[in-house]
Amino acid sequence: MLKLYSSQLVPHTKGLQRAQPVPVSVLAVHSTHANVAPTAPRVASEWRHTQSRLLCRSAAPSTGGATSPAGTSSVPPQLVPPTDPNSYCVLNFYHLTPVENPQEATEEHRRFIERMGLDIRGRIYISSQGMNCQYGGTLEHCTAYVEWVKQQPGFQNLRYTVWPSPEGHAFPKLRLKYKPNLISLAGGMEAMPITDPAARATPLEPAAWRDMIAQAEEKKVVVLDVRNDYEWDAGHFVGADRPAEEVFAETPVGESEAEVPQPLQGKDPNTPVMMYCTGGIRCDVYSTFLRRKGFNNLYTLEGGVQNYLRQEGGDHWKGSLFVFDGRMAISANKDGDEGGPLPAAVPCQVCGSPASQLPHVNCANIDCNELFIACAPCKAKLQGCCCAECMTAPRLLRPAKVDGGQYGAWGNYADRDEVGPVISTGRNREGRVARRARRRAALKEKRLGQIEEKLSRKKMVREAMARVEEVEAAQREKGVEQGPRIACSQ
Image (cartoon, rainbow, N blue to C red):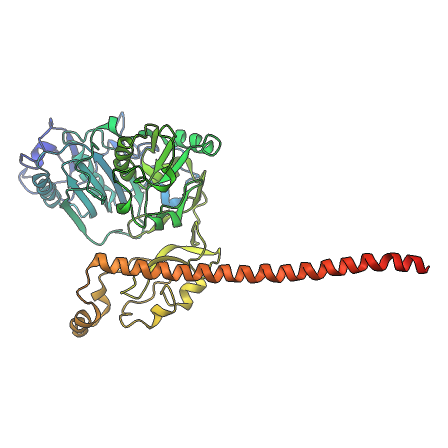
């Protein structure tokens, strides 16, 4: 066995300065020569799981087999961190800290992953303000990379979470890239002081968050969901309004007083605001904007909703949790919803049935691609489409995903000889933003039609009930008049 140090693995570059050599992993070497390339990395035995920090350095090396974290017996399987080094998982983290020359740092990370032979897939984004990562692979490969990252200056306090992915890789490929902005937000993030903790909201551990949200209505606390609207549909905290914006990138960042989310418009700047998102980065970033707007009583959920569900369960949560990987949704129920569909927080968006099921489904019509929630009968009836009109679309190339799941590139669903004609006739020069705006307008018109139809039905019911009440009133009045006559005749 050969113990390697972080300073030995990758040569020095300007992007990330080297810290003092610290053991990262123990590598098995199948040769007596020290200069032979090691095999795939194995996570050192001195790393073990704990409930609160998931993967933390223990006081002494583990002497026994892997065991489940303390206190996780009542946690659903989707939330229990894996312990087998060869089991597949999803690892999430973000860390806001200045990074010198992030482009060179990106290439350094790429070289480390390639040299160590790590088979990790997902999204790893690096900017001048830190990192934002969601990736998967085997537990030993995922943790080998993140523990190397933690040795870099500024990343020592990095916190990360690990989630089981029993079906294997949750992402199709690795996207490791430099991005000027770690998340999409109008106007970008570079002007925001997001690397300064004092400029961000006060983080609350899940237990403190649970206690505070339990009194939110009584104490006039605003619970602000800063996710995409379709994430709210899958599940949300009780008391949080549905975001008015379709995607987080549209969240207001303007200078006028009205340029704040709807739940905060007209609110006193001293109003307590509890902000939450899936993993925490969107809250941290957007809280710097709200502080600049004068709100000074801001709180965020440490580790995001995922961490809350793992530690506190589904208290004050409705529905399930949308996630951005192949799982698409995870349970918030301590019973785990084992073997059954996951519940959504909204009715079926096709027929209005309360028996809606997750995960979301992308419309099988490529030109629509609407992400929606439906009940099982509607999914089967519409063959994976969002409406009857989409079932006759000219570019209905994809199979129906009745049980949910993500689609690949649309070209995968067309014969190779047909790809050219489809490109030339099926899609015009209209850009992605324009197509999204067109789909949004069509969806809005469709939903308005559904609302009008529902209101019309309610009106008909009310009118029918009114007529029944009039008849009953007339009968009662007639009965009162006849009563004295009958009495007098006797």
